[in-house]
View (cartoon, rainbow, N blue to C red):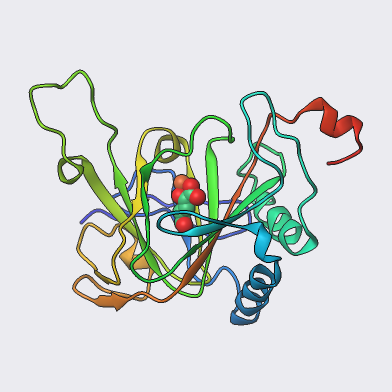
Length: 235
Ligand SMILES: O=C(O)CCC(=O)C(=O)O
Ligand SMILES: [Fe+2]
């Protein structure tokens, strides 16, 4: 098989994912176990009211609510600002600093439906994973011009990524804009050869991994900020 093309993200070695479009960067062990424990502690220290319970997961929203008219930005707490800055130093947000973090918590058996992250964010998403692995699946969008062929989730499926605890995943460009991503609500993942980053992960095709509770920090940049927020002196 052909060697993967290697590209570099500023200051962070190369880790472009084989068999995936050239806009996937996967860094195993991006943070240490101590940092992971610290981040989990901070997530669970947040007041109960900070959590929003959804069907298959619960989440915390930090930085403000993205809105087509602009986000009323709120300062990120120190513990998130530090990582927002560290990741932004990779220069993945066109010189800007991430100003929005979504914390998602999935118990084993929970997931997220295939979706696009949409136009409110700069088209790059960076994700730090804590506590457990998951498998992120990618799908082609529904092609409304192709009405003769039934388009099932199965037929639209294209590849997966194994996302291990303490890793950083960066998705950009067409991986952000074209493909949909989702996480199946299962308790175990049997890895197939469609998992495109196995050569960068400590696992092999055929392995069966049991999920624990995973917390993800989805770190993004929202370009459109409401002027009111600036006038109020918020960041
Ligand atoms: O937990 C993840 O890694 C994915 C989360 C996600 O897709 C989102 O919040 O939009
Ligand atoms: Fe998403």
